[in-house]
Image 1 (spheres, rainbow, N blue to C red):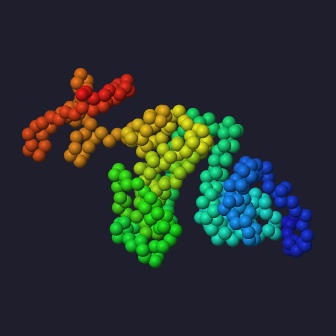
Image 2: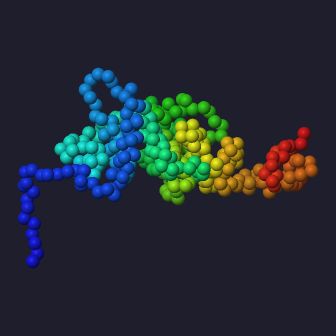
Image 3: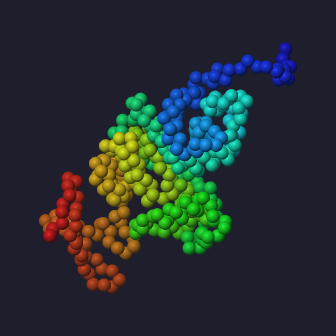
Length: 354
């Protein structure tokens, strides 16, 4: 006989234990001990960023736990995150909220995330506390690292990009936090002749880069750079940059140096794809005592009218390089000789002749 539900949810009192409702295999229950241990250490780091007088604030641990929930479950909107915490029992349990406790307004998260959380660098400290817990558990050996970047699309229209000299940064609609950070970065940036001025930037998010990476349509985006320990694929450092190869390679140097300084980890070798195989970066790795496991980005063939690598031959006896005889544009044939350092077949540096 087919049954029919007759209850109308009119029961007045319930005997309910939230702790018993969260299964032991749930992700949030499994990471809770590590998060609790890490946040206990970080509370004193946040204290100087709160006033000694006034009403008690919302517990910063509650907000950090809520942001961790959003990260673990892919909830990017703080409005949506607040709504999900209201409805999901596991999210409430992880944040230590009772069934009738209210969740903070979404604007509270925005103010703290852009304010005291950023100023105190609390997210970096929380991340490193988790990495240290992995190190204590033997999951990070620090012998071999890999690096790569993922492209994240910026919240900026790809149809409204402009040349830098076409934008009036003093216009009222340009007085935003993103523009302010961009202009402050330009004022503090050291001029670098190796960097070209972007042809197109976004007026609303000028820190993002105009990119076609990841074989997708051209868009404004950021590169999320990961430094990963190869033994158990634990991410040991992360750095966000504009989605440009130059910035991603520079971020790799920053991550390696920071990991050595703050976590006392320095790899013996580094694996990466061809985008990291520039001569300058490979030379930096060798100078730092790190063996590169990176394909060389071969730029030996030139099509701009200058000599290609194949146009030169190395004179071993004279320790010099000679360009083969060429004839271009009706000019008489000539050859060019230039002394240079060379890397021999045994990877030894051969100094130029004097």
